[in-house]
Length: 90
Image 1: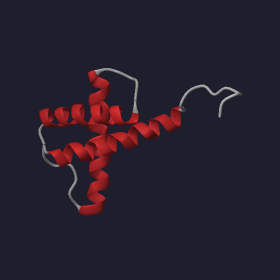
Image 2: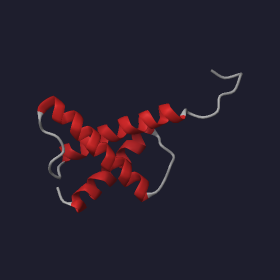
Image 3: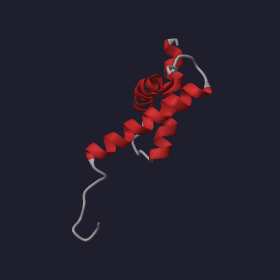
Image 4: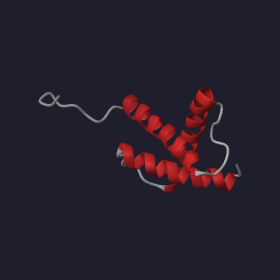
């Protein structure tokens, strides 16, 4: 894939993942980085499963990248915590 394809896949997958996870951070660069890292994570996972990762610009590539981006955002949220906890709420 070309650099432009990675950027487009990153923006689409990052936006989709942020919408699914309800991530409140904003910005095109953040969304693109989340999507591209998601493509790397999702491509690696898919390559271990069926030997066909993210290799071309397609709907499947965007889906794989979005799955990887969702996993990345969930791990980041788990590491950072969901916010301050109060004694009254659980």
